[in-house]
Structure formats: structure tokens, C-alpha cells
Amino acid sequence: MVELAALIVGYLCGSVPFGLILAKAAGLGDVRNIGSGNIGATNVLRTGNKKIAALTLLCDGLKGLVPVLLLKYIGDEHAATIAGMAAMLGHIFPVWLGFKGGKGVATSIGVLFGLYWPLGLLFIAVWLAMALLFRISSLAALTASALSPIFVAALGRYELLIPVVLIGATIWLMHRANIHRLVNRQEPTIELGKKP
Image 1 (cartoon, rainbow, N blue to C red):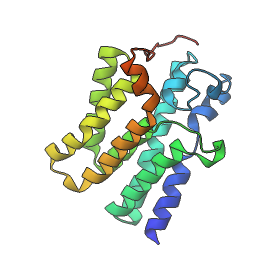
Image 2: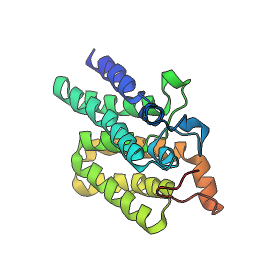
Image 3: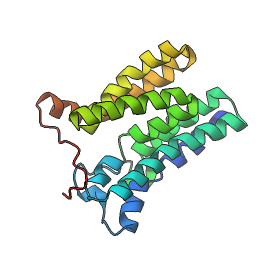
Image 4: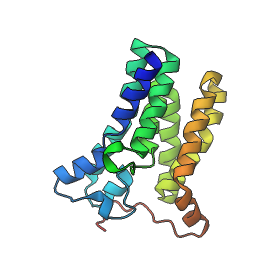
């Protein structure tokens, strides 16, 4: 019963399209009509509004963090993990938007923070380092997610290895087109404050 609640709560939290809601509320239009068509913070940034992009990033992270912490409180680690994975799926496949959402990076960071906060910090540290070096959001996310299982082993939290591997695999799967562009050196860079 707790597992079912975790699945439902996680999915519903994850499926709230904050990028779309915040951009429209700020008068920026429908972010699905610009850039990658994605509802995540990176695409919101392409509107040129850094504050709304940052708020989207925070909210997308919280919709991964909150259900994990909630299910830890009313359930256990297993239920929290289910809630976290469901939140990611909700973000990627939101029922409200015809199952076309984001790529799950910010939400996965929230999930990692909820499961074991040092993992979330390490993910962000790697993401920031790669983003500053190469200014490519997808490369930063792919690198951070690929290294996360190593962080799990280094921290001795082997019980989190399977969910972290699944999170990483999901991120890589959702970035298939980005990987193709990276290989062909056609992936766009992060342009702060630049309108499309």
C-alpha cells in the first residue's frame, strides 16, 4: 500500500510542469515553442529570463526532493526510492502535457538529495564544473550522471547503486539526440541572458 502511494505521489509531484507554468506566468510564452521544446530550466533559460530559469530549476528539483522525503517519513527507504523514480518519470512523461515533458536532470538532483544528500552535492559539483568548462548543459548532465555510481561506491552506500544507475541510464536515454549532436560537435552552448 505504501509502495502504491509512493508511486502515485511521486508521479503527480514530478508531473507538475513548472517550466511551462512559470514561463507563461512571467509573460514569456510557451517554452515548448522555442529551442528544444523542452519544459526544463535549460530551455526556459533560452527565453533570456535567468530568474525564471533559476526558479524552474529549483522547483523541478523540489518535485524530486519532496516526495522522497515524504515517503521516507511515512514509509521507508524503499518507498522513498520508488517515489523518487516515479517523480522522474512524472517530469519526463507528464500526463497533463500528453506525456511530453523534460529530461529529468533537475528532478533527479532533488531525488539524489532526498536519498542521500552528499550524492546530490557531488552531482551538482560535477555539473557545475563541466558547465563552466564547456558551457554545454547536456555534457554536464551526462558526465555527472555517469560518475554518480562511482560516488555511491566511494561513499559506501551500495544499497543506492541500483536506483542511481537507473537514474543515470534514464538521463542518458533522454539525451540520445544530445549525444548525437555532441559527437557531431553541433550541441548548442549555454547562453546566459541571450534570447532565442
